[in-house]
Image (cartoon, rainbow, N blue to C red; front, side):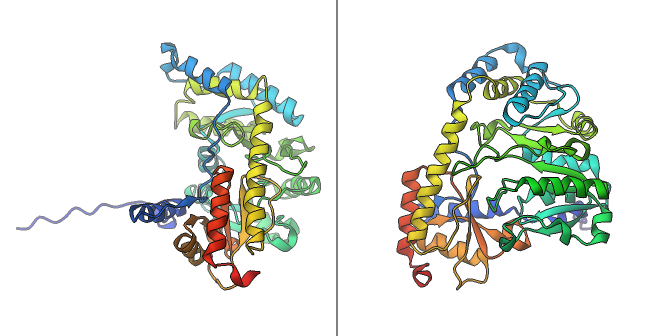
Length: 398
């Protein structure tokens, strides 16, 4: 008698998740490379600017101490004090080291998990559109329903809180907001944050403001912290990251700061899921955000130069785009001949050897755009410009 084959059963929630867009783009690059075609990869926001020497030395020295290989279990007091002092000095925000700060194993980890501490299945999250994919994926893992808040060019990509239907606002429990914005690259004015705080208080919504790009702002402009506005701590928290500004992407260092209750619930959740940040990495984080901060301006200036090389060159080639005012990305419309951003991405890598991310990967309102990451040196970006100009894809746009 033939034995019946065992059938593996998996969670229905996984039906919401396909293969990630960046995995698909990596496969496209792999195939082109295997064919002998060089690809300039501007798809993934993976910083290639190294940390300062003092940060690398702090990490290396701590890694040579045998005592640092135990479970961390919690954030060390020197790290908490350093984050508190950093926020006071950089953002003019006062934080209680013991109750208003929690480390994250990178903001991505925090974004994936914080919803589990806030939302029950079926409750509603307000998410910007377009947005960094995990803004929606984290709440989905928690079983949350998603309402997309459009960020449209004609409104300078600002969320229009007044356009959120009354019944949606009353149902909502959690909202994710992020400026400087990935992928649209815009800043939000102070008036937006004041309106956001009033909106959250009116409808009892917890706000998460992702602030990963506050240091990467160009043309003499600046960005601060959501928490500097009166009432912000009453309604929410802010995530910050050392990945881009300090070149520590692979070390996975982020922080959740602000409302003590939200921080406490996230700490409790994390205590049941991991054993804390590796102690040498905590030492590297302290070294990064204390003492000499000149590397921050050096990094900002490097990204501004990359932006100018890429955007000025592409504008001259006929690509009608706007130079970003912040972040490490460029958000650009696809040529008029294309109705789908993914089709343009495939043609761009085929005809120009340049790989970018389709805007559709960032939500429904991202269709019609692509995102380019400023993760190559200026000489490589100049080469990308020349290859795109020679491709003929923008001949009709001039």
